[in-house]
Length: 258
Ligand code: MG
Image 1 (cartoon, helix red, strand yellow):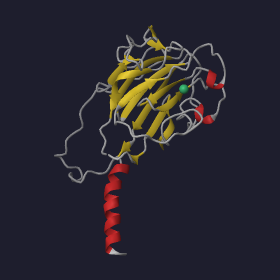
Image 2 (cartoon, rainbow, N blue to C red):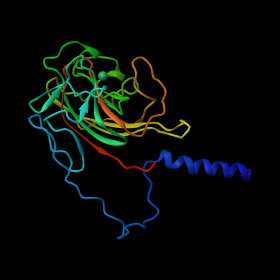
Image 3 (cartoon, helix red, strand yellow):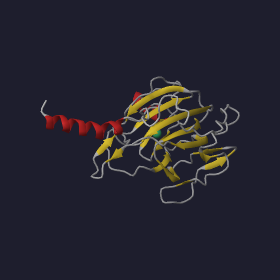
Image 4 (tube, helix red, strand yellow):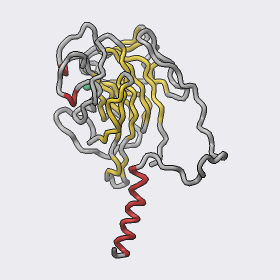
């Protein structure tokens, strides 16, 4: 191989590999090195039950603890008009989506939701809401318990892109969980996409999205391309005119190699 071509390929690989790999063995430490720093000690919290939400990990940012929506607001900055009662909050139809006041990048996110009971409507018109990572990428919230819709729009689908691996939905009225690992997209200074967003989702503890590569932001009936965006943006919950309930929402920011 021509030397210049070989050098060019090496430079390209050196630039690309750190972008596509989230974890590599750190060459600074030898195996079982006693001097390697120990990870921080945290309290891992507790699991939720149907009767009561669990306790978040001690290093999580709590976005809703059952009391108020002070961490959330509408797009125009006004206070969230969704209803808070009995340790949960509920979508108030036609008030609009709500956003966190803080912006987040790569993260682990825990969300609990309950679909309206008794159920009303069918398909997309049944308990529809959504978790919009960075306000752009929707993990669908829907009542998909014994209710049919298109596969890439059912509960825990990456809307319009990936159906879940299985339908792990619980009946309406029961509390359900999403545990999401999200790595946002990265862009070069000139706006070129360096790496697409990736997402893993557990629905009620079951793996439903396995590190899938997102094609771009969520839209209805189309798959728009990525647009350059900041590394951190607020999380949003969708108002789709249905009184879906949420509780126990927390997020842990991830520090990953870029
Ligand atoms: Mg939705």
